[in-house]
Length: 312
Image (cartoon, rainbow, N blue to C red; front, side, top):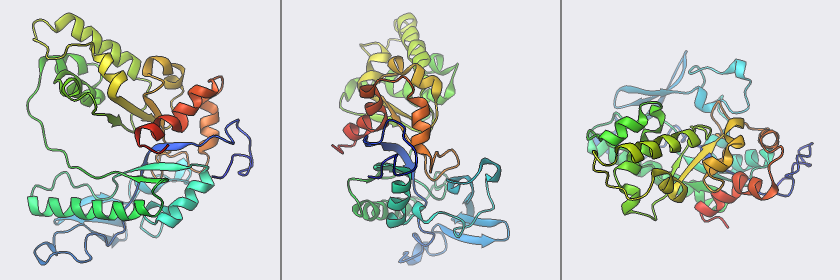
């Protein structure tokens, strides 16, 4: 691991191993067109180059543009939602060797890799949907094998629409719809029935957590009788036991870290997206950790992610 002093500055974390709990990949543009089944040849995801930049095409529909998802290291003034090409993209987005070099530059030991590439949630055909997911997961497994302790690839599991709602969910999420997943997992009793199930919320920050835990607990205390709640404990109990969230930059969240849960929050680079702190992630962390005790800092910067993803 490259230390902070090697990178030209000292932030008090030179010897600490930091782990990004939310980073991303952009698959090779030929991932789904090589060895594609004949029946899907004209429908599988592919990249088309235009004067306006590269675009993913999925089943004759535009499935996304190359832009903000490939902006790590660029100046904010250069951000744009579209107009970039794979030639403009950092190779570390899809090549494991280049990725490890970029991680070394950033002083990051390991990264948890989330899905990137074309938007596929509108694909309804089971055959095409299954092919897209299987091919991506096979590729992610290959990429992770390049450095199993440093590149933690996650499988892509497409979500289906859930039409069934609940009174408690509606009441609790009224102030902040971004936390629908937390409310649903909690009030439907999924976390109650599966105490070993952990879930991770990424790219949503952590400053909202203390407030929403309070909101859910209030909902439970006031409404559990008429809603005939299926959970036995306060909602905050399930968060502290099973929930995790990542942040990129969130000074307010770090200030309220104890209420958000010292064991429940994890730092991330969001590489190679536009919000990424690359290549100055250690400097960004140093800002957040002013006055934070070393033991707490170690958990947030990598310890919690190492424990959750079994990297110890």
